[in-house]
Length: 151
Image (tube, rainbow, N blue to C red):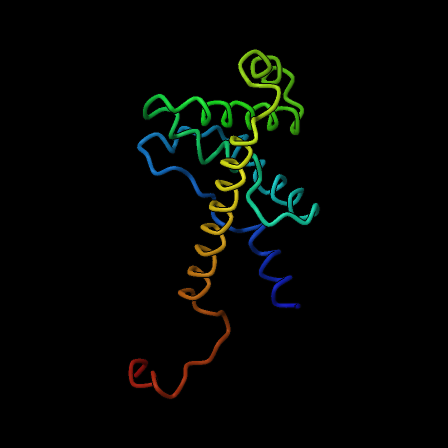
């Protein structure tokens, strides 16, 4: 459908960035935030209906500053960080991440990652829908029902 295509396009380009609610959320590096749109486009082009790995890194980063995480989430976070560095050709980050990230995730960790990616995707799309519902359309004429408010 045309409306689905338009919404999907808006979601990729303007959907909000979902991050773990924390006092640390302002410490996400600008390069990660700037690369989210490109990462979303890649996922969309592959036909995926989930958040990108870059979005996972942005979501999880503030959580990593809160307290130690269970090993499976540490593995997921570092593995996603390595994938981010590889995708965006950051040689310095790749070398650092190769030292700490697992080469691959276990099936259990892959399942947790897929669930998180789906959850972030749904939250992002719902936030965009909510934003679109509450914003006024430009160029619309006032209806007769709210004319009293205007005069």
